[in-house]
Image (cartoon, rainbow, N blue to C red; front, top):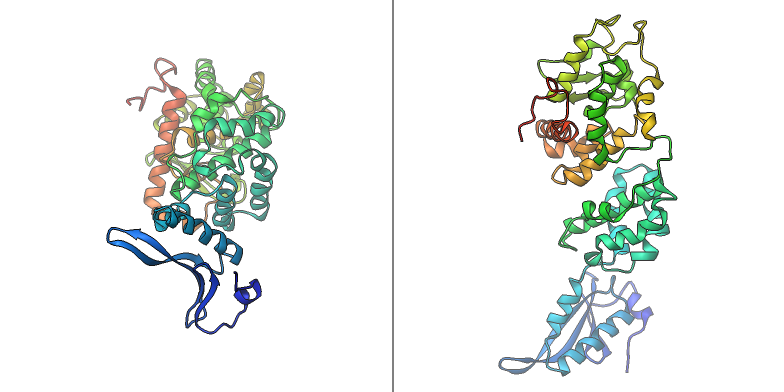
Length: 398
């Protein structure tokens, strides 16, 4: 018969010692006041039957009812000749559910997010993912399961669906890092299972798979300020406003760097973009053009002033996408095709603010080198050998 009550277990001040609950279950109280559960039972050993004490966890984490349930199950294992310790350890090592893993991921990541993003992370998963896969072990979640979450909203609510996809794959990557599953999120397989999204939204982004063909088509046409500006924007992941406002003194062509000052940046954050051979080629073509104010703006309009917002957008509009959307195309490509590149590096490539402690953890020089490697790989993907015969041929080896 049970001898303990919840009130006794929860009492703050209990004298050190062993308090029996019946059936071999005991509450142990240490001299420092710590409380834990232990099951004393008889088990089979190579030398015969022997008594063993089997820890069941801290009383702060395991309730009286849970301790009784664990003790009952392990006593049954012992009666049937099994080893209760093996069963206990296997259960303790079982991975969490997807919902539990998502909440653990949120607890770790949220301090680095804005309050709005931290709240949206859980609310979107609670609405769309948890009802479908929340109770699944995170180790068992596959591409088909994620597709089941996304399919109902993929076409009708593309913006929300993309966010749910990104957050769900982050949870699976977090679970992989936590050793709760063997594989990272199945990004490329998931893409295969989903249809192309509708082209709505202010910043509708072209699927990254279609970017090389679009780039080749534009690159085959006559060079204009707006066209070269768009090509540079695609290759660098920049905002088109930054490209339209940039001047020649922002570039250090010998170091292959684009030093973007605060005045042309969103959020008043200066940034340096490593320039790939592909981007340098675009700049050389711009230098060769006889445009007004060629010594100031890199891509001026016909009167020497800054290109309008529509100048780049109209080149993309016939596709149903937007110029700004190429940043999302790049970011999705980086997530799916460059998993060895840390997420912080891809975010930095888009001039998103990265906490100093994150950048420092990689070493600034290494962080900068990884940004260059990422943009080099993006350039190879985008150009793909389909540029003008005499142009964009640099750096194509490999």
